[in-house]
Amino acid sequence: MTETRTGEHAGAPPPREESHLRVHPFLLLKRAMPRGLYWRSLIIIVAPMVLLQFVVTYVFLERHWQLVTERLSAKTVAEIALLLSDYQENPTPERATRISARAGHDLGLPVAFLDGEELPETPSSTSGLLADSLNDELRRRITRPYWINTANYTEYVDIRIAYDGGVMRVLTPASHVYASNSHIFLVWMFSTSIVLLVVALLFLRNQIRPIERLAEAAESFGMGRDVANYRPQGASEVRRAAQAFMEMRARIERQIEQRTAMLAGVSHDLRTPLTRFKLQLAMLGDSPEFIELREDVAEMERMLGDYLEFARGHQGEASEETDLGELIEEVRDDSHRKGHDVRLEFHGDLTLPLRRNAFKRCLTNVIDNAGKYAEHVWVTAIRDAETDGGGGSIDILVDDDGEGIPEEQLEEVFRPFYRLDAARNLDKGGTGLGLAIARDIARGHGGDITLSRSPMGGLRAIIHLPV
Image: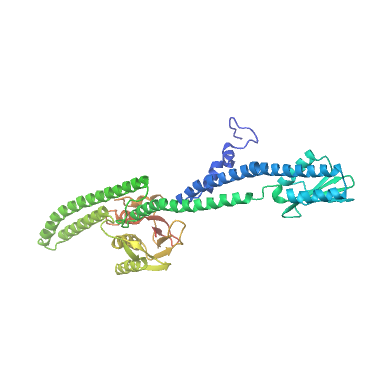
């Protein structure tokens, strides 16, 4: 049984393949363009200047220079034709001597009449602007065989014209037949262009710097670092963007403070009756039912602490240069006291600005969750190489040999108050906020946490931090 499709013909390529093979020229241009604003702005300045230089050079060389060369060549050939005509009226040695002397003195043309000579057998010059101009003028004004050479001499052009019984040879100065000082125009043009380009580079750098500072301030704020010293600078549009950023930052900080204050108040109000419960239970004795009530009250206190910690996030703590290796060792020692087997491995420089206490909470949540449901935990911290746009990154890999998590739930476990029903519950007996708090802290530092299958058989948590 064969399947047919309406509108398809044998041998016709699928439409999807045709679209795949097409490459849009604008897409290629976009890929070739630099990504940085500085270099793109530089291209916007340099490209029109270079195009203008090419146009001006073309117009000058193909129009002005050609016109000047043609007129100089016409004048020189006209003088040669006049001298030859004067000699042919009375072709005697005396007249040849007199014409040569007058041509050298009055016209600056070295002329010699060589009786019995013939034109050279080597080919005459036929290429180039000067050769083309001389050939045209000689064919038009002198109807005799001729031979020219524009390459043998740097300061002269060798012109030879045959007459009855000999050859008239003229070594005309190169400046008489073409505009030899045209390079001065080109030198001045390119020199002024370079000066203007340097000025444009300096000016452009001063205009780009405020944008770079705004980008750095936004990145620092996204990583949870202090940007208190930032001030708007630059053009009015950049100042508006900077002012909008500062107002946005103030609104975010004010919103977080209000949320934290509200939840802190709720937590405080709830702790008061819980404290009375604890006092009353302490006076009731140590019977089994009262012990369970005390455990419930302790659990409620711990839950309130988790709620407040989640609401507070990583705010209220300043960033400081932190040796991440030492911080991980502190968390490892705490986990050892809880009975967890944690092994460490470090690669590269692990120093970076962090909110130390907040990030310690992040590491503790991830490492302790791994230790609860596995016999062994491996923590590996790796510093990646620097990239073009920054100082690289640090990845913290937390592997264990536990039962792991189903793949479809690897992202769900980051939702606040989410609990697994399987044997591995990442927040067993808690509020379901462990990983939510850890990811919130990591993202507050500009990074993230992802989960995957570990080569050790269990779960792998990757904490990624930009440096």
